[in-house]
Image 1: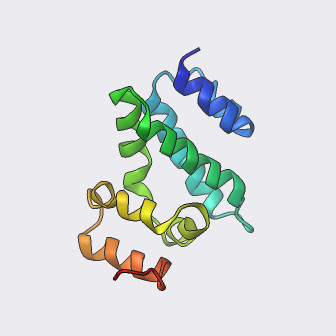
Image 2: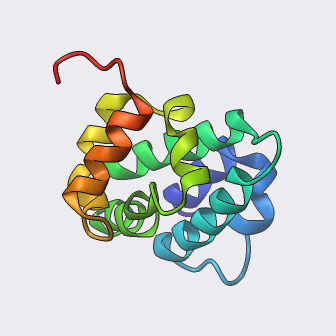
Length: 131
């Protein structure tokens, strides 16, 4: 089993049906599926913050992975979409820090204007120091 799949299985055991799917044959396919799941979960009432946080932590791990394929999959399949909908954007302060958000700025600007990324930053972390 690949390291990226094993790590996902350990961190996200309740998503094993996605992780072990025959359709998930690459890190990019996994991140596409995790992004879809994240979107659905963000609309749940109440949203499962622990699981959403663990998906984000797995993303952090992927972004630091030695494989460019794993890093790119997390960046393009997930990070670019963090503020895709108001529901998922509103949950970000509960799963990541403002520093994490700022660090992903260039990725989010692929689908969103710099002004939109800034606007969400102000909305989500209004008391952030150093503005």
